[in-house]
Length: 189
Image (cartoon, rainbow, N blue to C red):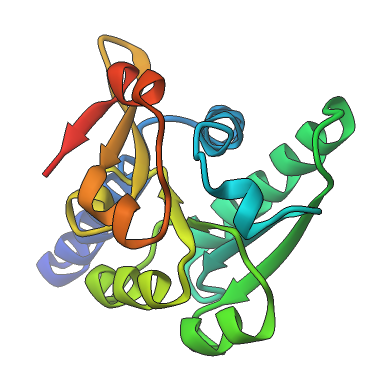
């Protein structure tokens, strides 16, 4: 059986795009979520913004498999953290950006921490501006999203997860991160 050149090129594009998407997040979600739950404890203003419970929003796109997979893994990791933690109660709100605008979702639910999964065809700077207006701290496993204006992320450096902090973004979102965390993190400008 002989394949035509357009079919071979299409196959190569599909393989290349799936490899690129799988590399968007260098650190597995099961490792990211406990890191982000620890990071939020270093926000001196968190208790003032969410005194009784931590409401975590997970922004994803149902039409993008990588995003749905990250959402599912985040839900599982949060459930595991909820079971093993004696800290404040955790509630999760999922936000399907294919069906709902982030601004509407943030009005609907009192989200404290917003986890952004890998997204496609989405302006991250607009999401960041929306979170800032709502005073919601953003976190992500996609390192370039931190450069694009989200507050906290993780990357893999020397085969170990490293915390990334966009200090300006975190302050604009209403977080006041302690110096102990900032000494451990890589500051992104």
